[in-house]
Length: 195
Image 1 (cartoon, rainbow, N blue to C red):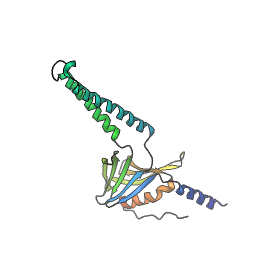
Image 2: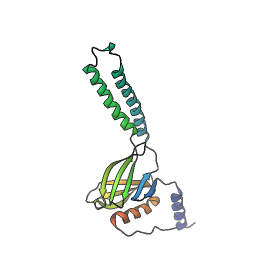
Image 3: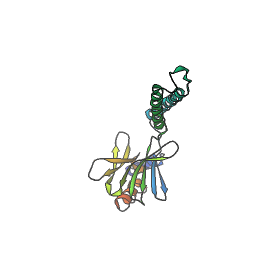
Image 4: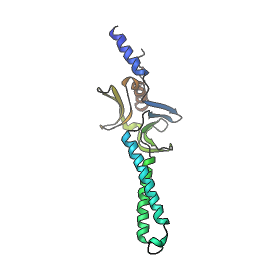
């Protein structure tokens, strides 16, 4: 086998692997979604938050509904205060438990903006950040030699900060990098090398 055929075989295997992200075209642009599940620690944290949220909500309702035999007067200030405290904690914990975990990147070509979005379990999006195309200075691929994967990053103009769009093997990110560079930076599309 020659070196060229070995390289082509390795590139073909990399491209044949399942994709680590999905690009969905919509009428206003396209959405880039990760194809991985949430981290175990985040999923565990949300499960624990749901459990304690339900417990606090039950305690809140229990304090308000308990017969007045256990309390002095109709609805004492201590009773209302503790119910309010338990209710506020329950609402916050249940909100965290229902919140999404994986950020998506929406490229809105109609409005000319990049949005970082987190969808909750019901599918409702919450915009975490929105940036105009003018705020993006470059589209970079940062390779990690230990994992043979790369991060595709939209870097803000005149800063070192950026938005991580996708993480996958380098060969899978080339077409997306070229599309983003064309759409955001008005650079001509580069043709990827076909094996």
